[in-house]
Image (cartoon, rainbow, N blue to C red; front, side, top):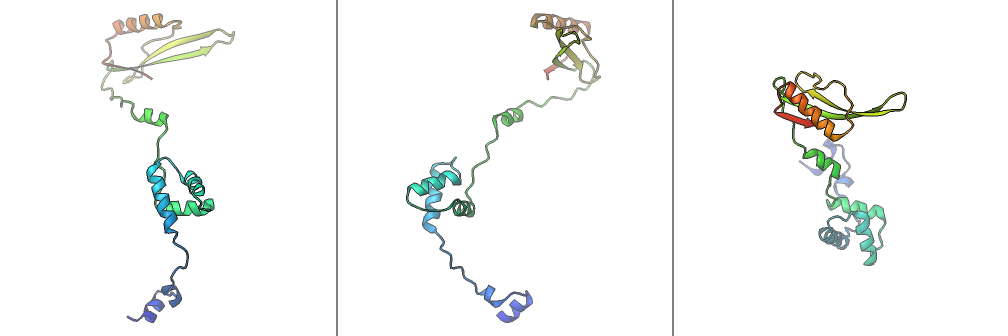
Length: 163
């Protein structure tokens, strides 16, 4: 098939087919950017631009960003500390019957007259029934005693998770 016929078929001008870019490829700058990015892994295009300016290359931030992206350079995603901690939390197993797993939580509130109180809530995960009804937990020692009392009243769970 001829060039004319092929260009007509795709509705493209022949000048587009013959186009050759006259833009400077800036191979020296690209090579230096790759070297800097390899040596300093946590450097983005802004810091690389500063390094290039110190070496005598005068480039706008738009040009540096375009070259940075064209070279396939990018900062590796580093998840925040909070997300990393969430990702490593153990997966809670499913409760298959009553008294298999309990969920414990500390709750704090304030009465209308201003008195503050804290409570330890114990919930059976399977039945969603409260293992502990009421009772302000003023200290950790009282919480421990109350939890042991609940465990002796009903069978102790295989899993007790603090949520």
